[in-house]
Length: 330
Image (cartoon, rainbow, N blue to C red; front, side):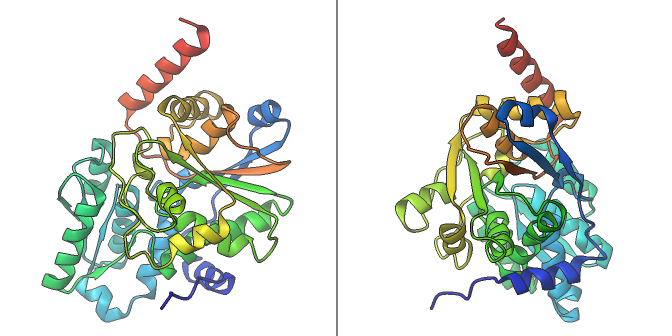
């Protein structure tokens, strides 16, 4: 039996539930991107959330929806970094035990951020899929509640609150662009935006080095994709062969998907640093990179979701130096 989809009502309920814990994020106009495209381009700054990414919305909604007994026993999740930080941040506030399972591919900056939250971090295997298996082992052995990073109604509804804020802040928008991985963000955006106006285009941008959702949609069913090293490490990870929600919701709601090469992602990161003075991770800059390289049609009023800030200084410096060399023809 197919799982019931997440509705706009669910997103509104999530907005009410998280209102005292996850603040609205700024929406800013980007003059340079607007000049380049001839459209009005705004940036939704999810990188300014307390946990450094949009994922605190879904994590907050999910954990607050658990029973007191479940919160007392604790939670566990598997993550490429950002969702783990968000779960750990919420758990710390609620004085709930949290164990975060990650693979060896998670960058050092994200591992350090996880450890700073005070949560227990367990590093397992070479992929998010291996970390996921360990997570469910912890559930069986210790009674912890698994907080799934994307394929869960409360997670999807929480991420969808971004869409409700956009409807309030920029009701004339016609396009929303963001990094697409497991599909929690885009499923939530679709659930929030499409009932208001089915003509609003939802665009997903993925890395060419391990785009599980892209390849799954192409195949017509969830598939396993080998992960490779990429600047957009937050866009790695499988969608689960038994995916219940996000695969179908991405099929229903996402109007366009594309794969970006590393240089396109890098140019988005460098642009955000040089133009908006913000150091953001590759996944967060993917939408900007797509616009800079004319890979996406932004419409007349577009929003790019700047999803997270988890990038180490050495990567940021290297990316910026390479981008400047390319721009100056050196």
